[in-house]
Structure formats: structure tokens, C-alpha cells
Length: 132
Image (cartoon, rainbow, N blue to C red; front, side, top):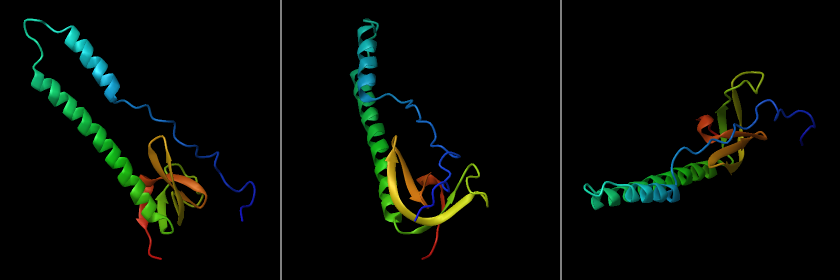
């Protein structure tokens, strides 16, 4: 049972959405097209370099998806487990950690959060998984 006015969601708002600083495949291809159109005709771009750049772009995107999926799987395996979560700003008056049972896992802006005691915390803030 939740008592109105006891949650402090307004003290620690969600961090602002992080701007993605990497190029997606579409932007990379546009940049590559401009590079090919403006290259020196006496020293054209090597086709091996072109394919190496495409392969690297694909690998980076694959690693990003893999990391997100691993975090989501890790979060799902924590549902029902007792954890201790580090709180960067003292949301909890008694200290800098919150202890409770993981109720659910949320993905927002490509970040994975665990819900503990009604609060949402980044999965990387879990400092201890406690025995039951």
C-alpha cells in the first residue's frame, strides 16, 4: 500500500536524455558519399578502406545492441532479488544507498533501469546483490 506524499520522485529526477554522439549508418553513408564526391581524382580513396569503414560501422552498431541486450537480460534476472543500489544524490535521508527487492526492469532512452521500492535506478548503480 502506497501512502500519498511519501515518495520523493521530484527530488531525484531522471537524468536528461543523453545526446547520442555517434554516427548512425545513414549519417555515415551520407558522409562517405560526400567524401567520395569531393575526393582528389589523382589519389582516389582505396576500396579496401571503404569496406573496412563499413565493416567497422556494422561492428560498432552490433556491439551497442549486444551491450543493451546484456543489460536487459541482467536486469530481468534480478527481478525478485534483493539488491542494494547506490544513490548519487542523497534521495534516501539515511545514506547513499537504497535496499529492496527489484520489482521490474524498465528501458528508457536506451538505458536499463531497475525499479526498487517504487524508485527507478540505473542498473549500473547496483552495488550488491543480497542473499534471500
